[in-house]
Length: 130
Image (cartoon, rainbow, N blue to C red; front, side, top):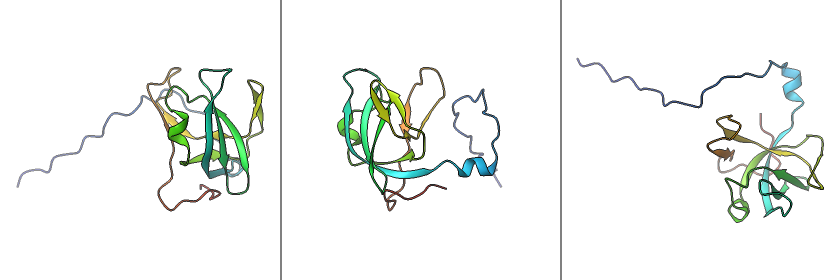
């Protein structure tokens, strides 16, 4: 009988660096939640940053994200994504960012692409990611 063809795994981004291991307790400190993008606009002060208003199940919050090269504001409104909800606010371009969007990229200083994480249908704002 002929051998079944082996599936070749598609090449992924080259992994060159790893962050130090963290404990399970440290991981549990990171509050990852589903959030809905309610508003999004370009920032006048930056060509890289988008100013997003997201709803995390409890409240609306401002998140500034350097994703303008890959996403148009109007394409994000109404989308669900994953956010770090308990990140200390950080002042950027005169505004405070109150969280961080989760995305995937090849890890290069200038990534070839950036992909926001989107939950499967059925997920709701406020749901915790585990």
